[in-house]
Length: 277
Image (cartoon, rainbow, N blue to C red; front, side, top):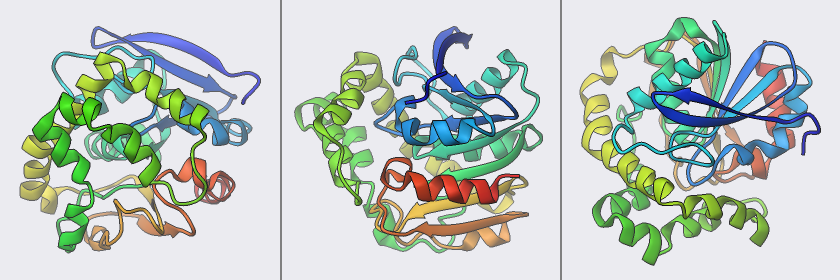
């Protein structure tokens, strides 16, 4: 763990949003995925904080941040990132997003490209995946469909959340203590509600939006997209982004599943150091 790690809370959209931070220098924002929180970056915060001011917020409803009874759209959650930057007086930042954080990061870069120097997307599909994606890729995130349909029954009685922590990892496994660190926060009613609202919004609004508009979306922020070689959620992601991005590349992380920062932290830090300016 990082010796000089700090914890802060800021007010964003009427919510108390928690973030952890370490280091000095240019800002580097790390957005976690589901079903996790800022602690998912524990292995990389230290090395990255030697060169950057590393900022790891808990997304609304996740970790130690407040939940909202309304908006879990990518637009609003991307706006949370911009509002956090404004609160901290950050004109521009580098951005890394995993899973949920990947989707939010893409939305933030598409909406506010002038606010981000570079973007690293970890473990997910890009906004132009509909252009060439195989059908098996859309079958893989079955949990989203089940949670959207069954709601609290899926997240509590069926134990889908904890099952995903186990099934999506390829290299190594989470210890019982690590799993409980994430599950303790995921059992909060606000986290359960956030999960259901996010997944339902994804199916009802986000996927139809990108299906209708991906041809007119352009990524102007320099982007590195990394997917685990054995990540069941990303096998088959096409390279169709080439027609819609100024400077973007898609690479596979060897011997890795979905949780890149925890399965291959040394590899990731080395790759980030070579990519980030």
